[in-house]
Image (tube, rainbow, N blue to C red):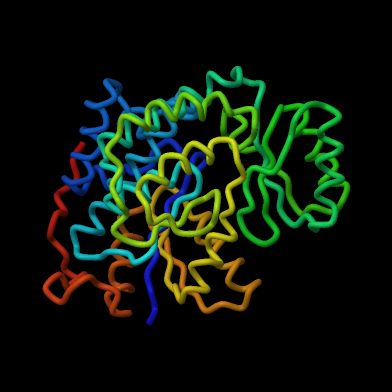
Length: 340
């Protein structure tokens, strides 16, 4: 049986204008953003739609902004009767995945990720830490590149995204030095990411300790589907294991490639990326090809893409129930007229 996975992007996916057409056309999306604005006591919607980019890229704003955008889109898809068998998210995206699995509610999560962002930023001064995506570097050269960076500060691997792509994180100077060595060793592309902290390194351990206190106040429920953890690339079944995993994630590598291969090995062949990004869909494609796994990967960050994905999932029989089937050629539902 072909299983369906909903996957969610993390920080770095943000851009000014994300979610705009959903806000214009769907009441559910507007209500999601309005709820976030009220909970956070900040104009999060305005930052998403208008920026400025420098403001949106601040970690404690980026994290709830990406979460709210992803959940606005998810709520629409679920309202039309679609649900997943597996769920996972890259870094920050884990919180969206846990909302999808009814393990954490949106109100708790949006406040929690703002604190998460705040704690991360406080752990390392603005401008000191950074991250870089490295594409096409042969694995045997990785340690040598890291050693070059370590002569200029601290740097380590933050993400194993897919075959041929990793993310480095640490002191800016150390990351930059490692980038140069990666280029010298034949990396096809190296690029600094639009983030303001060195995520998934030991430099963020103090942030994890503070996050642990905030998580202890939450009522975390058992996931209603298979939720894959970033730090182990395996399912978490016991609700009591979720908070410690989220704490560890702050200062440990994200095993995204391994998470994808786990789901693929369990028979999951269809992945839908939900949020302001298409990068995870690309990771699915490259991972499936490397390991010779059957796959279908879709994403949507615009209304047109959303409607197309729903139509495709419907044709593939991946709807939750017969009574939720709809005619996507003349869809009305929650859709409203454009508003200013």
